[in-house]
Length: 155
Picture 1 (cartoon, rainbow, N blue to C red):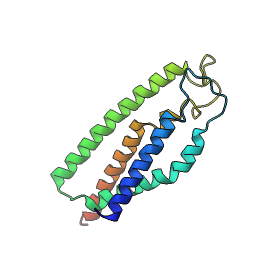
Picture 2 (cartoon, rainbow, N blue to C red):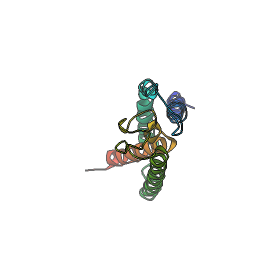
Picture 3 (cartoon, rainbow, N blue to C red):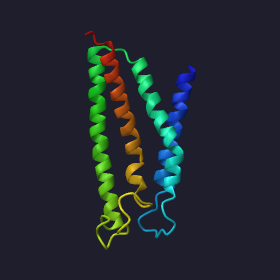
């Protein structure tokens, strides 16, 4: 296994670990009262370079390794597009469930997040969860494939 592949695997795993930490450790459950502010911001700032490297290396790896065979490439893109649609559906469902558990949106006075805005210690998991992790990487794979297709196209 090459050094680039090992580095990509490590970036991918650390990135997943960052999403996991933000979702499960630094997001306050809806039934808990939090007065400490959003400590998840510190973890987000700490892991941002890891997230970016993971996306960049995924893009570069796909662009370098993909073999442009029209039927196979289109099949991968269609499969990825279907995966994106399913993940967007799952994200939408997850978001609706969390908003219901919090008692409503930040505009609702009965909500736990009233006047907090959309980015707070209760809603970190809206943005950093398993669904958004895989969606971001699938989109990166699709962009890598499209970039490789553009590179090999003869004008």
